Each structure stands twice: as C-alpha cells, then as structure tokens.
Amino acid sequence: MESNLDILLNAAGPMILAGLEVTVPLTIISFIAGLVIAVITALVRIANVKVLSTVFRIYVWIFRGTPLLVQLFIVFYGLPNLRSEE
Image: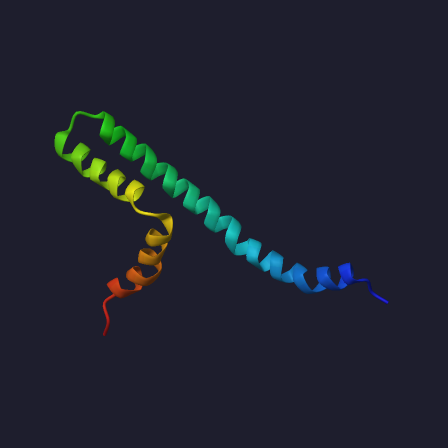
C-alpha cells in the first residue's frame, strides 16, 4: 500500500515540474528585462539630458507611486485591450 507522501508526489510531481518549465524561464527573462530597464533609467537620470531625464523621472514616479496590485491589474486587464480587434 502506498503512503500518503507517495500518492502526493506521484500526483503533484508532474504538475510541479510542468510549472517549473514555465516559471523558471519567465523569471529569468523578467529579471534580465528589469535589469536592462533599471540600468537605462539610471544612466539617463545621471546624464544631463534635461528632456530624457524628466521623462524617466516621471516614469519612476509613476511606478513607485502606484501599488503593485494596481500595476498588475493594468497589465492583466489593460494590455489585452490594446490589441487591434478585427
């Protein structure tokens, strides 16, 4: 007779592995994209280009001033509406 742990591993194991196949690459891609955006933002804000510095200052102000949950709602519900509908 199988123990509860064996049953759980047999049932949940494939689901966990399938989730990891999507989650790990998505995490790596998100980290790299965030790092690139952060470095570009920092370099532009350090530079003395007034217009670009102002644009990125507003960008940082918006992202720091809104709660993460609101940002997630905008991405989840707002981005699909930007698609052109035929």
